[in-house]
Length: 337
Ligand code: CA
Image (cartoon, rainbow, N blue to C red; front, side, top):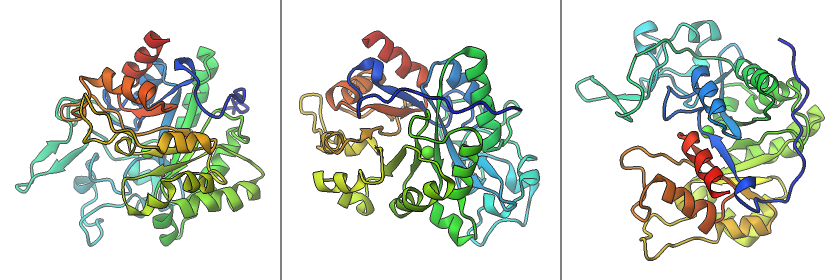
């Protein structure tokens, strides 16, 4: 398949000014409706009008990049039946221990866990049924071909939002996943900060290395996003000076949403941190994760999913967000505009 030259978007202000500038990132595709990171889930999210398709990217034993969330295969495939004896000591089957040809044999399904008695229990019980349909693992290149192909056929310009998954783990297993991902992006025409993508990772040391070494070595310059969890490793970032330090390397931050609106907030007392304003003052966008409408996923301070979106987009003033239900966020922003 031919490659389409980079999708160019105009450089706008550092952060979103109104509803029309705010973005919806389809978290693992339209993962609220179809098994995550499958090509059907990508097509659905694209048709729903999400601005960006998210790809978590993991490397195989034979150095192929696949779109996959976990380092392991156990949560949403039949690997334990197809490849008995291939688990590590912790009982898990790791992507990095399998070749792409083997991974393509696996059936992919909704996330599940095994109960103490060995029963499969679906993690989000209201979502697409376990083991229904025929879903498969695909490569990063296959998804980029699909998004670029749909951009061609629809005339739209949907972006991509790849995550470098656990770079330290990959280094420990002899893999430079960042260089592999950036090389693939370059091959697909994503070469500058004008290209319609963000590259995200949780590991600051690697973000810095990508910025200082990997991008220059490949002769490209891409927008980078520092993901943040609500734990100690990220505390230094959470101040005006921390954000200024981060902004030397990153164009945006992707915090867990509880770091912006305190989950202990009530309807009458919304506790909003300085994270968004600190990031904006440092010139960075803010794209929190993950917005879900499933049972138990709406914080007590919000009436419903749309109210939660309203609070984040227009009270906390985030520039975009990751959601498993991109149609709902797209509709919300359109109606608000
Ligand atoms: Ca991710």
